[in-house]
Image (cartoon, rainbow, N blue to C red; front, top):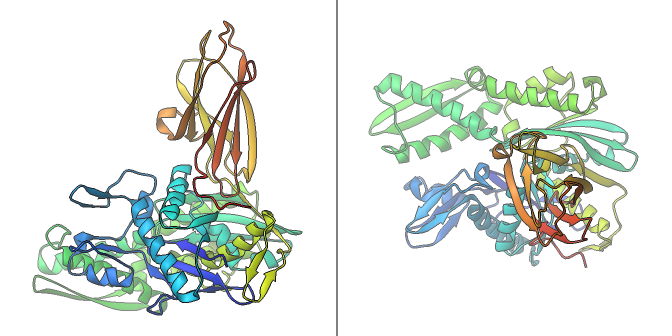
Amino acid sequence: MIPGIDAGNFRFKIAVPDGMGNPQILTNRLGEPFIRSVVYFAEDGSILVGTEAENTALANPKRAVFDWKRFMGTDAVLYQDGKDKVKAKDILTILLKKVKETIEAKTGEVCEEVVITDPANYNDLQKKETLEAASDAGLKVLLLLHEPTAAALGNEFHKKKNSKAIVFDLGGGTFDVSMVQNKGNLCEVIATNGEPKLGGRDFNDCLSEFVLEQFEAEHGYRPNPEDHPVFCQDMAQRVEQLKLSLTANTQSQIVLSCDGDLLKTTITRKQFNNRVRLLVQKAMERTAKTAKDANLAWSDIDEVYAVGGGSMPPIITEELEKLTGKKVSCRCEAHAAAAMGAVIAGRLEYARLGREYKIQAGTLPPPDFYLRDILSRPIGVAVLDDDQKEKCSVLLRKDTPIPSIQTRLFKMTEPNQTEVLIRILDGEDGANASGCVELGRFVLKGLPPRPDLIGRIEITFNLDASGMLTATARDIVSGKTAELQITYMNKADPT
């Protein structure tokens, strides 16, 4: 059994194979089809997770962490108690421990290997921290799978032969859009783009601002998190409920109280749409760009999938259908698609590794199709240009198929060098190295000196099935080599 985990900013969704190998969403002990992505650090040292954490946080929101996903790969401190500093990776570890506990309690099986979905626009550092968090939670990651790719599988796109589809994935914290095609027995991503700071939380922020404006107009002051933390936490929950209500109703009411001052107001779907229209427009522009990158006209598209909790407001469906001229598919529930697709991807990865996939009914045969994803961000090395300025020279371009191997020869920068520093960068070709994300660095030492600046340093990038990178440098004169494994620290053993 290989569970699929959609590690969402607002909610974690878990899917497991049923007795016949088909994915199904797993409920938690409260019967909820998700685990809320909330962690509460109690004063007695205990840690609460999920709905219990969210409810407890109403009394003391400063001890809780709600938003974490956008901070992966950064040094941002999301919570501090004394000397203990909690970062996004730590929050993910706590949540994954809860996921592991839930899976084992609900299925009666030990959970060791999993497939985890991550945003297509994650850089290598963010992927690395995801793997580390899983390892710390006692889980081996069989595969890291891009969320829109997983959602395509969850919508059973692989069963629609000779078709092309858009996967519009608006989650709680991030946005991705991918173009996928199914040709013969190959299901592949052909273009992908994203916005790491666009998601359902931004829609909530627009609603919160609207509510605060009305409160201030009625009572003459604006509550803030420092002076009114309980009010702001209560507002955050009620705004989320308001947004969900407006997906089904044309208007909904919100009631809030601060220091005895009551706000009772009705907000219409039209007002909500006006507030979030710029966010929706940005997502549609990304969608149009991705179709252009894939050299596809809207008439080439057969399916449109809107997935992720952020895609539920009707304005998303309306604008997507207006943009593409196609009806948005209702094949799979938006929240569930990525987790369910991750289960299918686990079976595909087992087949790729030549391993038997066993379930209650016995051993399943290998799937009758293959999956190929692409790299969403360019990766290169730091080089000196003619003006002796460090630039990024890309080896793996955006949209490179995964897995992939690329090799290139580089010149020395100074005569008689005996060692070379190789810096791995996430950035566009020709961009200033200082503006790129450094993924890692390593040194090739003990090189025989030569006065001429010949091309002698051969650098190879090896991108694995999870989109994780190993970089190797070889001096073709001496044969000396050095290697940097950016991750692999907890990949599942294929033996």
